Image (cartoon, rainbow, N blue to C red; front, side, top):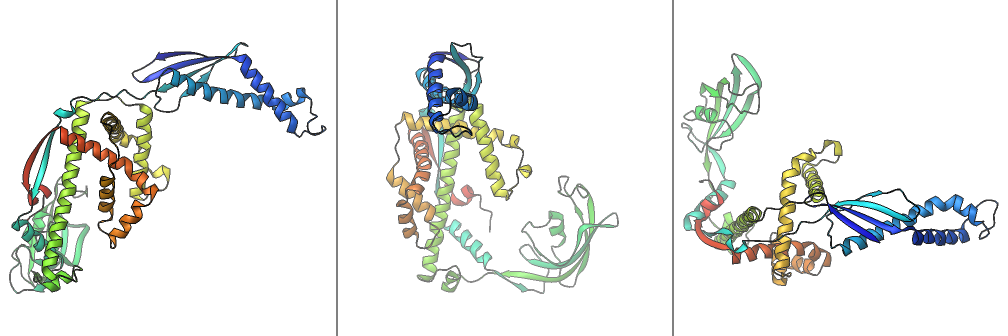
Length: 431
């Protein structure tokens, strides 16, 4: 077997393979003899079909089968001999036979050579989140608001109140689509309506009738209203104030805490806040590592892998959107940039794993499973069930070892700790 390899691009290779024809013809003859022993052809007894007839009937099919097998076997041997690492299947073009040799050209992309650099110089800012008394108080207020009731008040409305109204909106005297409603409730300050609309409802009382103007923003979703001014006529039915429940054992029980009362509930709330912050810290660190890896190790990726990843992302998007028909799928080109990034990061992290000889840490594997099961009842039973399921563990292993690679970079990189309050880090709005 003669093999020549030509570089036709950074990653594309053109490999020509030439094989002597005699051994191939011998394989074809042997296969035809085997077929002849069992072939059933009208007018001949099994095993008595003349070789010439067998060749006429099955020769082309058998020859194609043999050539395909020879091609696959020789291709695999050739890429190993030439120390090539194909990124995907090849495009094969066979040459016209000359009676002495069988030759073909395989065109394919190879995996890029990844040589990592500057891992220890990667700058990481690690948030250290503190949960203070104010954070706890704000969270408890937020939870109380979830259980709030509304009580009618005989006073002017203020931010935080709920106002129930009828309204009619018009532009230049014409009522527009969606511009009318009856018994519509607006929580002032919640941002459910345009600012001008909520501002017009501040200071009204039950039975009031009022009018005000609302300026629609230029980027408003309804094009016929974008950038225009509308007149609204409003009739006020009720003004209600928010009534928050007391912080007591009964309140705790409304969230499913049946033992330990309010104190147990507060512990649970803090633990949930810590868990949320921890998840966001990990996500922040991961994003920083990924961005720094790409910046310090630019990589040209095979088009084959990029195209495969684009299809994967498209399918994921279709599942999220509930789309089943291919003709309704988002355009494939929409996923090009994300696919390129994902492929590059996958190759870089894989090289970190290889270079640092990282193996799956069993403790981290269990921690990952515990994290997945944390929100379920009988969580410990589910953890044990998952840990004893080889298929589940096989799916989780790549994610766990990839996280180990990220952790290695954080540990050995230029990492600095930054203390930050829970509210600021989580971007929690004021209660």
